[in-house]
Length: 165
Image 1 (cartoon, one colour):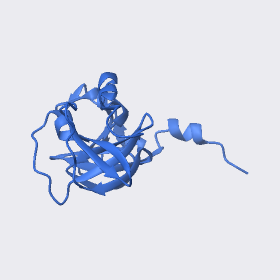
Image 2 (cartoon, rainbow, N blue to C red):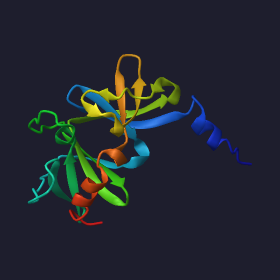
Image 3 (cartoon, helix red, strand yellow):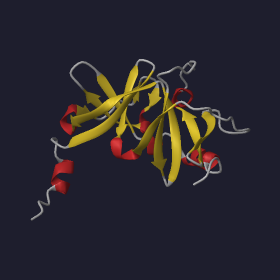
């Protein structure tokens, strides 16, 4: 016999969020684990002429070419040289596979929705439209990102021809 409490649990303050956490600079971010297809080590990225400035280039992932977006560039932050901790977080957004370049991936977290609150209008220099919530953990703040909103409609169109579906 199934217990049909899913809708109640999602609205409840006790609903558990499962997140992949990563850093860009000193800031720690989290994204819904269900959005993440995989996390890979940095591989050679091929630059694409006339791509938007925040698009680092494309990679070949098991025969599929996918665009890689540098979140540092997207947020207008200082660019650093990639190192052994740099990762590409591979996600699906609107039926397109995209990689997001991050400084390092930390862990998979399970936090109660009750530990989150709506974001202030601007935080860490990032437009709050990208942010779904702020997670208040014991010793740190976690910025929860909505990867669907990292790119606006025109930007999604600009990269729609980069890579294969």
